[in-house]
Length: 283
Image 1: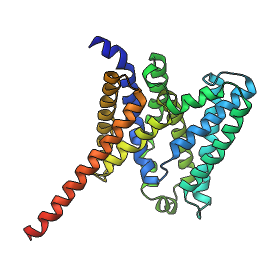
Image 2 (image 1 turned 30 degrees about the vertical axis):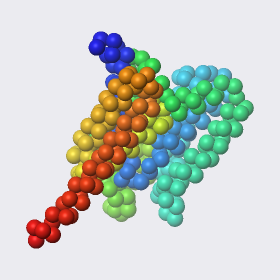
Image 3 (image 1 turned 90 degrees about the vertical axis):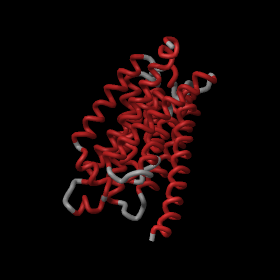
Image 4 (image 1 turned 180 degrees about the horizontal axis):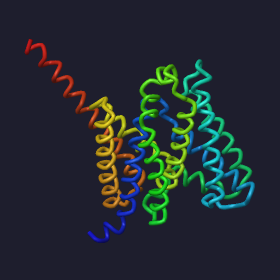
C-alpha cells in the first residue's frame, strides 16, 4: 500500500488539481461552444516555446521558453476575443480551428528547421503524468490557484457572457475585455496542464466531466460538483488500471473518463426511455 501511494500519490494529486480547475473551465467551454480551445492554445504555446528554442538556444522547459509560450497565448487570447466580437459571420469555433491549422503548420515547419523540437512535441501530446514530481505539482498548484481565484472573483461577468454573449454585449458589458481575460486564464491553465499530462488527457479532463454534468442538470453549482466527482472517479480508476497492468497513466485516465461518459450516457438514455413509457400509463 505504501508503495502504491509513493508511486501514484503525486500523479493522483496532479489529476485532482486538473479536475478542479479544468472541470470549471469545461463548463464555460461547452457553453461558449469553443470545444477545441485547449488544442489550439496548446499548439500556440508550443509554437512560442519552439520559437524561443530556435532564437535563444534554450531548452523548451526553460523559464524563457515558458515566457515566450505564455506570450504567444496572450496574443491568441486577444485575437480570439476581438474575432468573436468583430467577425460575426464566422463562428468562433471555426476561427479557433483555422488558427490551430495555421499554427500547427508553422510548428511543423519550425520543427523541420530545428533540432530537439521533436521531443517537445511528443511531450506536449503525451505528457509525463506518471513522472511528475513535487516541483511540478507546486508550480501547477500556484498557477491553478491564481486562475481559480480569478475565475471565482470574476465569475459573474464570465457566466453572463457564457450564458448569452449577445445579451451581455447589449447590456453594455465589455465582452472583448472579459473574453480576453478568460482566454488568457485558459492559456495559463492549459499551458501548465499540458506539461503535466499532455494534450489528449487535458482535452478529456476539460470536456468529458463537463459533458457528463450536462446530462443531469443546467445549474452551474450542481454541474460543477458533478464535474468534480466524475473527474475524480475517472482519475482513480485510470491510475489503478495503470498500476495493475503497467499501462500508460495518461492514456488510462483518458480511457476511463471516456468509459464513464459512455456508461453515464447509456444509463441516462435507458432511464429516459423508461420514464417515457410509464408516463402514458399514468395518464
